[in-house]
Length: 498
Ligand code: ADP
Image (spheres, rainbow, N blue to C red):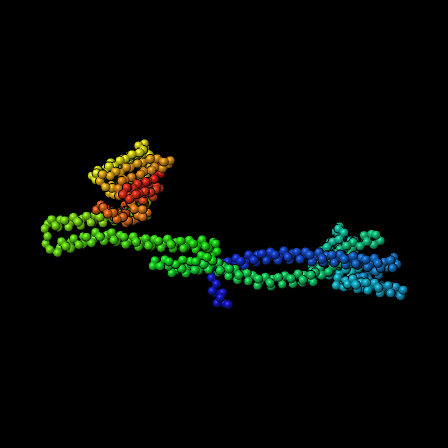
């Protein structure tokens, strides 16, 4: 038992739940008991008072019924009173012996032996009292009776260790309110009943509370069992195995949300880990090709003495490949900055019409060199946007460069910009090689580049559109693409206008 108590964790939900359950029930039961106790007490007192009133009435009736038999004088009255109070009358002579016998029988029926009876003058002076009333109790009885204004008075008095209930009624002698009659009864038997009932209720309450605590603990354990499962699974999850999921069929609604969120989190982690693994392998692959070329070329050059032009060629190859690698590393750094440190961007108001004209002028020559016509049409009125000029320029150059790269000489590229409500829409339309439908959703993935039969040798690393998408996202914009293989592609960018 002690071991079990020691095992209880006081900061556990199970313990708190059990405690809460027990306390709540205890409060309800105590409240219920108090109500029942006072209700019963009230009912018992009312019953008790009614019986006292009946007794007082019995005593009055008894005295009154004796009076006509006796001579109508002090002696007769006293004899009647004594018969009632002391169960003995002043001997009235043989002629009354039989009547007196009947009175005493009547008194036995009234059963006043355990009660206290007092007859006092209207001023509170005792005239007669039952045998059990000694001089010490008597003053307690008569206390305050002179102020009796009501027809009947009920009092509770304490004497020694006894609690008595007392009724005081006026007694009319010869139609005059001459005396006061008091009948008192001990409250102990009634209190014993009341305490007995309370004790019984209390002895029942304790096991009920213990049972409630146990039930509370069990209920919480049942409710929290998915948590245990959740903890178990969480403990065993490693990056190597993210396939574990908690079953949600038999879980309560509130916990189901937690379990679902947990499962979703593992799915996201799973996806992230796969992505990181794929990403690292792509980075390694992209860097491996130029490194292999550099290694091969230099090894070959060092195998024997070469002409200085040959060395120059190898150095040039090395330089080109190093440039390529540097571009990849810079692109990756830029991507991670865009994702994790967007605060490095410097946003300011930009007149888009002026800005796009600048981009157009800068790239026109590249297009011309490849004999591609590049046109800029659309809104010439000032349109203000909130943007980081350097990155936005990089984004447009990336897109237009792609259009140039994937369009055959003699083709056309048109840049159109127009306002649409609170948005600015810029479309870059080319008449190039287009994108296969199955590649459309992949082109924004890192390191994705489609295999084009007649692809330029200057094909990039596949990071360009990822960078474009990140920059657009930071500018609260959107990008979409429509394309038809061999006909051309249109990239449409939406940016919010200030
Ligand atoms: P990269 O150009 O370095 O290969 P990008 O991320 O810029 O990488 O583009 C990814 C892929 O999307 C390209 O390899 C190409 O297949 C396709 N693509 C992008 N722009 C166009 C375009 N204007 N026309 C046809 N295909 C395109």
